[in-house]
Image 1 (cartoon, rainbow, N blue to C red):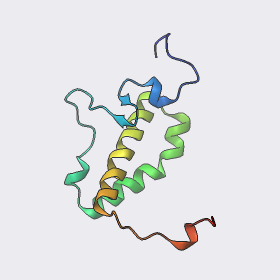
Image 2: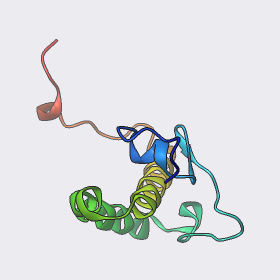
Image 3: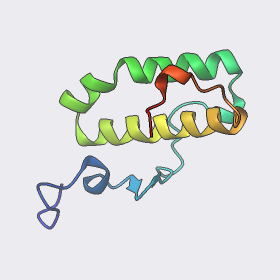
Image 4: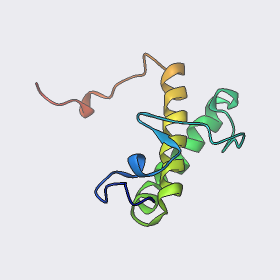
Length: 97
């Protein structure tokens, strides 16, 4: 972390790999299988793994590890939404307007 970075900045703002709403590719290093190449079961399994480790990563991981976690979560969830644009919404998850 550099001296010019605000201490109250989010991990996304502090870590070089993060670019606003999207993570930049880190050199030629690919971290994880491209979500497009994963089958549906593998995609869901990968998302479950990330969500299971989310709080621990947020609370205790390095800024770089958190940025990688955020990047990978965004990649996998974006692919899931692309495959399931009309996903079923559970009525019990809706709030009254």
